[in-house]
Image 1 (cartoon, rainbow, N blue to C red):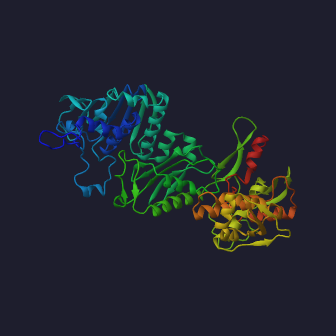
Image 2 (cartoon, helix red, strand yellow):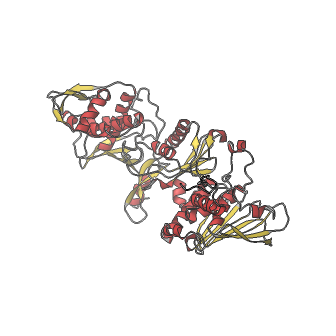
Image 3 (cartoon, rainbow, N blue to C red):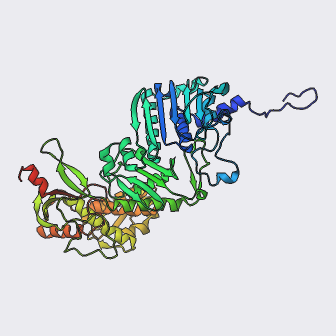
Length: 568
C-alpha cells in the first residue's frame, strides 16, 4: 500500500456521506410503491386517525397520497419529521422493549423523501396554523405556512426518480396495484375502527366503514357472503375470524396474522392456523383468517427487521399453541355439509350450513361414546340405513332429511380415529400374515426401515431383514386387509423419508393406514356392515369429513326436497 510523505498509510475506512447513507436506508425500507403506502398509512394509524384516504396513480410512480384526520404536526415538527431517526414514539432504549406503535425507527419519511418528490401539509388538532414542506431527494425545497384541516396529507411523486435501477425491478402496473390493494386491505382488517378508502387511478377499490365491526370490514375487503360464513375466534389472547373448512384458497396469502395490531409475516404461526384444519380440508388448499394475537409487549421483539415485517417471541411455542388451540375450538363449531339448490336451476351444490333445516343434530342414540374421547364437534343426526347405491354410496334417513354417505370416506374417518387413538396410547394392534411377503426396498426406504423400526412396530408392522436389499413382512396392522399390507408399508417407508414433527408424523401415518385399510369405493357392503359403519361414524371426532378433508356426508332436508319438487 502506498504511504504518504509522513510515512503513514492513508485511511481506508471513512464515514459514508449522508446522501449515500440515506440511499442505503431507503433501499431497506422502500423497495416498491406498496412500501410507501404502508409507511404512510401506518404513520396515520399511529397518529390516531379515524379516516385514512389513499390515492394511487400510475401504479405509484405517478402519485401516492395519504390523507388522514389524525393529530397532525405543528410547524416546528413537520420539517424535522423528514430527517433520519426522527420520531415522536421513542425516547429511550427502555421504551423499545414495550413499543406499541407501528412505526418507531424514524426512517420511513426520510427514506421516502430520499427517493422521491414529497410534499407534506399538516395542522395539529390542538390548534395553530397549518404548515407545508416539500422535499426532493432528501433536500428541503420549501417550508412555509399553509391553510389545511387538522391532520396530515403526504403526497409522493416521481418515486425512484434518482434511483432508476430500482424501477427495473418493479412488476407490471397491474401487479403493483394488486400488491397495494392487498396491503391496504390487510391494514383495514387489522384496524376495523378506522375508515379506509383506496382509490387507484381515480377508481374506488376499497372502502370500509370504520365502525369496529371486523366482519363488516372483511365483507368490504372480500364480499358479504364470505364474511357471513366466517367463524369467530374469541379467546383471551387470540381474536378474529377464520374460514369454515369448505371456504378455502389455493395459496397462503389470505391468512393475516397480527400481533397487538401489527401485521406480521410469520410462517410458523400461519402453519399453526393450518394445523387446526387437519383432516378438515383437502391437500394444497388453505384457509382464510384474520387473527390478532394479544401478547405482552415485553414478550415480543418487534425490532428485528428494517420494515418491521417480522417479530421474535420469547416463547414462540406457547404462542403457536395458543393460535392452534383457538382455531381448533372455533372449527369445532363448524357446520355440517348440506345439499342446497344452486340458484341456477334444479341443480344441487354442496354447502356448509350452521343450521340444518328441520334436522335435529345430536349424539347417535345407539352409538356408544369412544372411551377417553371428547366429542365436541359437529354431530350427525340419528341415521336409519336404507340401502347402497352405485356400489359406493350409502343411503340413510334422518328426521326430515335424506342422507348420502361416501362409504370409503366414512370408513376412512372411522379407522383414522381408531388408529390415532391407539397410537396416542402406544397400543399397537397387529395380525400375523399367513404368507409373509418379501419386499425389495430402495436404499432410502431401507434406511428409513432401520431408523424407524420401533415406530413401524407401533403402527403394527413387524418385519426383518431378508438379504442386503429386502425385508420380510411378518405382521401388519389388524384393521388392514392382508393383500394391501406390503404396498402400504412401502408407502409408509417413503413417507418417513420426509421431515416430520412427531405429532405430524403420527397423524400422517394414521391417515395413510386408514385410507388403505378402508372399504373401497365400488365394494359391495352387507346391510349389517353398513349399519355398523354408520353407527361408528356417528361417534367419531370429525364425522363430516375424512382425514384428507373430503366430505363423508351430504344432507338433503325435506324442505329442500319439497322445494325442488314444487310441493307445498
